[in-house]
Length: 124
Image (tube, rainbow, N blue to C red):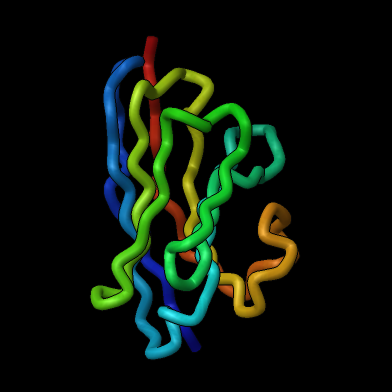
Protein backbone atom coordinates (compact mmCIF):
# COMPACT_ATOMS: atom_id res chain seq x y z
CA UNK A 1 0.00 0.00 0.00
CA UNK A 2 1.44 3.35 -1.05
CA UNK A 3 2.09 5.82 1.73
CA UNK A 4 2.32 9.59 1.61
CA UNK A 5 3.89 11.80 4.26
CA UNK A 6 3.59 15.58 4.23
CA UNK A 7 6.00 18.00 5.87
CA UNK A 8 6.81 21.69 5.91
CA UNK A 9 3.75 23.10 7.63
CA UNK A 10 3.99 25.69 10.37
CA UNK A 11 2.78 28.97 11.82
CA UNK A 12 3.66 32.12 9.91
CA UNK A 13 2.49 35.70 9.53
CA UNK A 14 0.52 36.98 6.57
CA UNK A 15 2.73 37.60 3.57
CA UNK A 16 5.21 34.87 4.44
CA UNK A 17 6.06 31.76 2.43
CA UNK A 18 6.12 28.06 3.15
CA UNK A 19 7.03 25.04 1.07
CA UNK A 20 5.18 21.83 1.71
CA UNK A 21 6.66 18.50 0.69
CA UNK A 22 4.98 15.16 0.20
CA UNK A 23 7.10 12.04 0.01
CA UNK A 24 5.72 8.84 -1.46
CA UNK A 25 6.86 5.33 -0.70
CA UNK A 26 5.97 3.63 -3.98
CA UNK A 27 7.63 2.64 -7.20
CA UNK A 28 4.75 3.91 -9.35
CA UNK A 29 4.79 7.47 -8.03
CA UNK A 30 6.09 8.83 -11.32
CA UNK A 31 2.98 7.58 -13.15
CA UNK A 32 0.47 9.24 -10.83
CA UNK A 33 -1.22 12.61 -10.90
CA UNK A 34 -0.67 14.17 -7.49
CA UNK A 35 -2.78 16.73 -5.72
CA UNK A 36 -2.92 18.97 -2.69
CA UNK A 37 -6.11 19.58 -0.75
CA UNK A 38 -6.81 21.58 2.39
CA UNK A 39 -9.39 21.58 5.12
CA UNK A 40 -10.07 24.40 7.55
CA UNK A 41 -11.92 23.81 10.84
CA UNK A 42 -15.65 23.46 10.26
CA UNK A 43 -15.26 23.44 6.47
CA UNK A 44 -15.17 20.79 3.81
CA UNK A 45 -11.91 19.67 2.30
CA UNK A 46 -11.16 21.61 -0.88
CA UNK A 47 -8.93 21.20 -3.88
CA UNK A 48 -5.81 23.37 -3.94
CA UNK A 49 -3.57 22.19 -6.77
CA UNK A 50 -2.64 19.17 -8.85
CA UNK A 51 0.15 18.14 -11.19
CA UNK A 52 0.23 15.53 -13.93
CA UNK A 53 2.56 12.54 -13.81
CA UNK A 54 5.34 14.28 -15.77
CA UNK A 55 4.75 17.78 -14.45
CA UNK A 56 3.54 18.94 -17.85
CA UNK A 57 0.15 20.09 -16.60
CA UNK A 58 -0.75 21.90 -13.41
CA UNK A 59 -4.10 22.92 -11.99
CA UNK A 60 -5.02 25.41 -9.25
CA UNK A 61 -8.04 26.69 -7.45
CA UNK A 62 -8.66 30.32 -8.34
CA UNK A 63 -7.86 31.72 -4.90
CA UNK A 64 -4.27 30.44 -4.96
CA UNK A 65 -3.37 31.13 -8.59
CA UNK A 66 -0.29 33.33 -8.79
CA UNK A 67 0.64 32.61 -5.16
CA UNK A 68 1.03 28.82 -4.99
CA UNK A 69 3.14 26.61 -7.23
CA UNK A 70 2.96 22.84 -7.38
CA UNK A 71 5.94 20.86 -8.65
CA UNK A 72 7.36 17.37 -8.44
CA UNK A 73 10.64 15.50 -8.51
CA UNK A 74 9.98 11.97 -9.68
CA UNK A 75 13.54 10.91 -8.94
CA UNK A 76 12.85 11.71 -5.28
CA UNK A 77 9.24 10.51 -5.24
CA UNK A 78 8.27 13.92 -3.91
CA UNK A 79 5.70 16.56 -4.76
CA UNK A 80 5.95 20.13 -3.50
CA UNK A 81 3.63 23.03 -2.86
CA UNK A 82 5.37 26.40 -2.73
CA UNK A 83 3.07 28.88 -1.01
CA UNK A 84 3.87 32.58 -1.23
CA UNK A 85 2.02 35.65 0.01
CA UNK A 86 0.14 33.56 2.52
CA UNK A 87 -3.13 34.88 3.89
CA UNK A 88 -5.08 34.01 7.04
CA UNK A 89 -7.67 32.41 4.73
CA UNK A 90 -5.00 29.84 3.77
CA UNK A 91 -5.01 28.48 7.32
CA UNK A 92 -5.90 24.79 7.12
CA UNK A 93 -4.62 21.26 7.29
CA UNK A 94 -2.97 20.47 3.96
CA UNK A 95 -3.18 16.99 2.50
CA UNK A 96 -1.29 15.33 -0.31
CA UNK A 97 -3.12 12.73 -2.41
CA UNK A 98 -2.45 10.38 -5.30
CA UNK A 99 -4.72 10.01 -8.34
CA UNK A 100 -4.07 6.75 -10.16
CA UNK A 101 -5.92 7.51 -13.38
CA UNK A 102 -5.60 11.28 -13.64
CA UNK A 103 -9.37 11.72 -13.66
CA UNK A 104 -11.55 13.92 -11.48
CA UNK A 105 -8.52 15.95 -10.56
CA UNK A 106 -10.41 18.70 -8.73
CA UNK A 107 -12.52 16.35 -6.60
CA UNK A 108 -11.68 14.20 -3.61
CA UNK A 109 -13.24 11.10 -5.15
CA UNK A 110 -10.62 11.01 -7.90
CA UNK A 111 -7.85 10.31 -5.39
CA UNK A 112 -6.95 6.83 -4.19
CA UNK A 113 -4.69 7.46 -1.22
CA UNK A 114 -3.91 10.29 1.14
CA UNK A 115 -1.29 11.48 3.57
CA UNK A 116 -2.09 12.35 7.20
CA UNK A 117 -1.72 16.09 6.54
CA UNK A 118 0.35 18.98 7.80
CA UNK A 119 -1.01 22.11 9.50
CA UNK A 120 -0.53 25.59 8.08
CA UNK A 121 -1.53 28.53 10.26
CA UNK A 122 -1.31 32.09 8.96
CA UNK A 123 -1.82 34.95 11.38
CA UNK A 124 -2.65 38.53 10.45
